[in-house]
Length: 483
Image 1 (cartoon, rainbow, N blue to C red):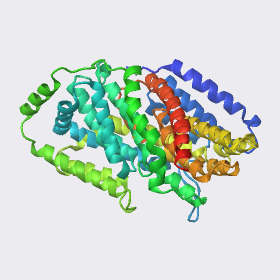
Image 2: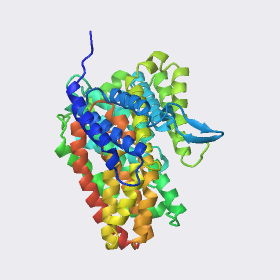
Image 3: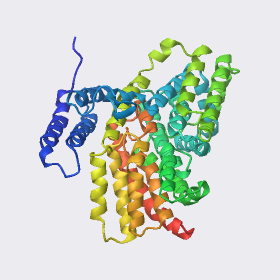
Image 4: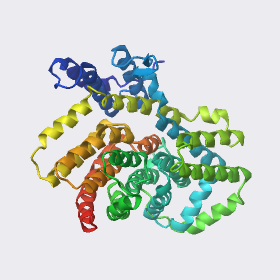
């Protein structure tokens, strides 16, 4: 029996992709034929991710095949001696971010299988379980506490917070696939996505894109200190942490809002579970080890965050917490490896010489010539924020656009430190846009609790809030403190 394919969902991406492709002769000067073809294919792929003729992994695989068969990218990397002439399509699967997410899924499975996640969830229910809103704030606080020393926001969200949310949702009978997602799981998962975005903006060391931005700023003569970033971000960041869970509670309300006698119920459930089992203790030890090593990876380059995730998974296998079958059956993890790897690679190709992104940078610089410095800054922030719809990686976006936009701002008369930090924080909050915008977005969306249309609608509204909060309130705060 043939599987169902939504062929109607192919109509829009094929039409848009084909129209862009045939317009190649009319492409803007500065964009190569290959660069324009990649742009056409990327736009068609993003549209297909929305219309969903197939699940996103299937769409990405088809795009991968088209990318190679049309000659946009060769299958294997081309070398000239020891020099890479052109990266091959297979190099897409060498990116570390999807693999970090995949291994974080394994850690999440360990939490669920051992019962440790349920135990932690019950403890949180006992402490904050009178209202769902209180649980949302408690999840945000967990993310906040570990953010300063965890530059892998994927590890923070997918490996630390999500397992707790999943166990908590299951405790309240909110599971994926049976129509109970919105009882509590959908709200908590999406709230964590936004909480992770906010905490990423608060600390210079809270996400990889931040670290990349600071390095690019220093290379262009603007040196931002850790406390300088924190001082600039603390007012809009803390306001966002206080406001966003409540706003989401109103815009995307959970069905379960109050849990009478939750404390007594949780205590009863904990009593039934009894003392921690050996498997739980081992899981807790591996989790703490992974968390500490993730923090160390912030300061010791030899300790790689992806390696830590693999190490934790290996230890889960060695201790018997997980079996090889458990690993192979973790469909969400392998789904992420396929589609996120391909989208990251395609997005990176847009930034190559002759691609759309370099042309866009040159066009923007010409268009804003003669504007006032603050108007220039506003335009750059808006362009930087909304261009993230074309990126599947925050780091790739920062590497592609941060330095050119910073130099444009400085040349227009914007204070260098203000421009560097404002663009840096924008590089954190633009991860709030799509379900493929960053590692945390991919990990949380792949859980299945939040529908894609809900994700995009909520993200658009919250994105407007962030732009006003960080741009206006944050900008005024930076003026007050002298930045």
